[in-house]
Length: 352
Length: 178
Image (cartoon, rainbow over all chains, first blue to last red; front, side, top):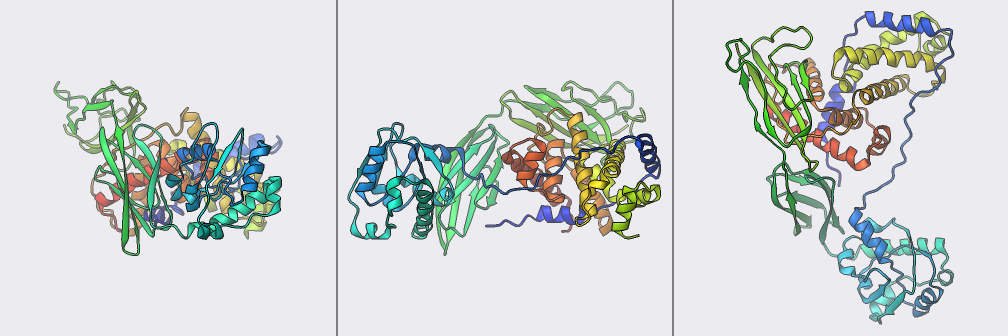
């Protein structure tokens, strides 16, 4: 499911090869510096861009934690189970996730498997392998219905030796077969990056499309979603999976608490020296890491401050002259003590 | 002079070749620097520092690669170094609730669109702007960006998605033709 990134396309097309006129004086500066260092040895290091090895780290913390606790040697042979049990040692295992899992139960010291929740997440797990300490593992094998047994891969001798590589590859292959038979389902996991910022991940077996409603009036389409909740409150996040005209929803609730706030954000001021509204400032509560930038319409910076109690008298920081009447805008960013980000963009009219 | 000859002459220290290389790439590279560094004078400093690195290291350039791509990478890295010096926490600036407005202007002509988009990018806070530039325009992956900025991949993704939503909102308001 690839969402077309129209913003990326637009900016790359327009700005990728954008040119700006260069002041010829700049070359003279370079020449001067090159001449100064010409006798020295050539610089040795450039920050190299490392070639990217694309590694998917899409699994949420929650899922990974579940997988660590959960294990899974699933076989139809009780002999194998026994051997695991007897050897009672470290084994490298690929967890295997099938509907049949529901009938195999294995518990170790910290978890009892509940496979229903994991059913819809097979695709996230396909490439996870991990070391699991099996200590006094009890494996209860419940008799499988005939047809389920026959759908499982035969287990070869190498498994008896708990040969790591073979076990991994065998199990991984078997996974690919099992995914297909799952019905349309969707569950949602999330990672909370900060109070306001969530990454959501839909775990759906085979949906064609997933649409998100974040409960604050905003929506998104795609298997993954990032969302910033800007207001305090409780929000129902609903993911709807679509396939062949069918749809299925999954919802969860998030609670957001934003403490810091800006209580006064003026939209105009009159730096004419008459003693009334001559300075621009804001009022706020509970903010730190504060920053404000005031820009003119062409993006030039007139004023910058990191002081939440700043005042601006309208003077351009470079010329020292009070700026012309007109429209300016400002960007404020700050945090509250919970780490929430608070920011405002607003127009500012300068009148005289 | 073709690119290969130009590079070879630069390696041997020809001032003429160096100036020619500078003239060929500087306008684009200044635009690159200005996307990372808001202040024009500082962006010009980055341009100069970047080209000095280019000339000092041009013997390392492999002729089968893209010269422009190589110069651009040096420029981007020089800009990132500058940002790091300026800000202890490059990506600490985050932003939400985004609805900044630029006055609706008459920038409808195609050649002005790029300048206008440039202004929008420059108005983004440092953290957003850096990730947006690296991902959307320079085309690095989130994985690479995480490495370059010493942040996590998920931070890179979230900074990018926030920057994108700021820009999308703004463009919708300004009704810039796409």
